Length: 462
Image 1 (cartoon, rainbow, N blue to C red):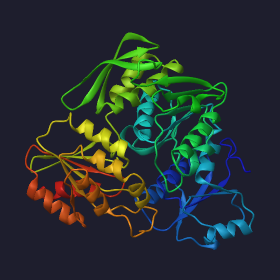
Image 2: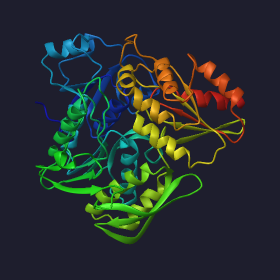
Image 3: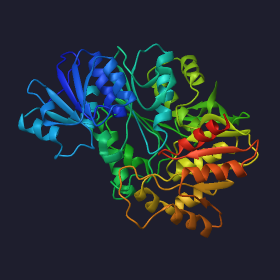
């Protein structure tokens, strides 16, 4: 297996270089002296940026793009064995690796490689931790799954031994990583188009925990069911966090301001401290996220005042309870929530935010997730006063023909909650313009393009 060595740059080719993660690592290798080039289907803002850095990109994927002077090739999960560049690389016997394998190899080059995992909250927690490391002047390399203002994107190339990355369990990709420290925020049923069931998911997280070496640390939520299954037989130190006072790190004297942002006193190993933290992100779930990074930072001896400064500077990540603007006096919030637990957390947070009436436009993400968690979706969405459903965002899936947003609408109505359904964004926008009034709050919610609805309404008023 080819091993990437940042101290020994060579020529790398990325098939699908315009992807959000692929582009970030292409830039990282380029910054470290590698001769990076690649291909993508079409030009985009991302590819234009890479081109401006001196990374050569070809549009369209052809066997002629693959030459014998390439030392290794990286490809995305969307690239199949019938891809002409993939075939040409095999014929030339050029070492190839899937994106997750490449990320894992890069991680080996850092003495402190921190991976943030969990079914929910990865992007927010990775962002919180990034802010703390930046406040501590640790010059970290950062890879986050959203756009973070403080690093002006999703990648930051540092020049230290510190690497912070969001680690996703889908397709077991995080099992190809090489963390020296890890956070597990929660473990729930999701990605059931890949995993067989919750036990299969738990087994994956158990394997992730075992990746951490003896001199490393696992910071894990004590509220995870049957925690010992995950933590027994790991080689590293285990530190727990959570809202339970039996956790190593927990919170007391919790309060919320007028926008639902939490403040709390830190409990450390059963003792309430005089250390108090005030967050600038909404919801009680973010207190739990903050506890995980406080625990990890404390393990690495980052002073509390620095931790506090980092958390104080964090105002959120794009598409995470993000204030977008307003139309006709209606506040517009956008959120990436696409799992019932995330929806519940976001809607509970919104109840603490100033509003007269709450409107939620939800766009389900993937047919398989909607089918597998249909009752849970209906239950969690019922927290909103008014629910409007958009068509399912297919993402990687084909329409099976037996599940739709109408199915979810019927499930909600069966549970006693009225929901509206419209087949187009234009119909949804017209409905909201007619029924929302000044002082109301609109949340557009989902992992697809539902964000466009709120943005269009703001533009229509302007």
